Length: 80
Image (cartoon, rainbow, N blue to C red; front, side, top):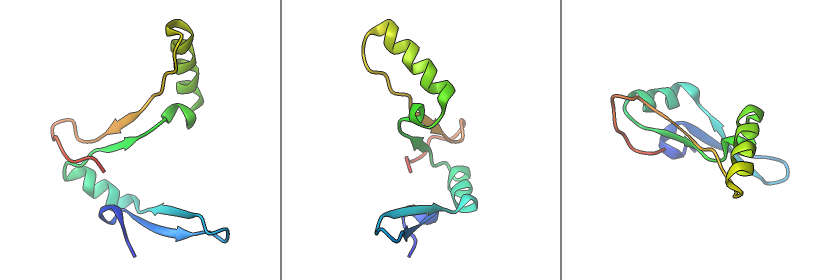
């Protein structure tokens, strides 16, 4: 079974957690068609961005989160 527009397939682990295995070629095709990809909390995935958000948090004295949106700049598309 394929979900989310065909660019991932759900895979259950031995502990019954469901992960979505990425199909890069299909994801790339959707992006080429004009879709956008949004990644939430990128600061939790990439330490240089984490350091940047921590510095901003110190200056602003509030929680900061970095998100990433990728897609074709010339094409406005749907969010995956």
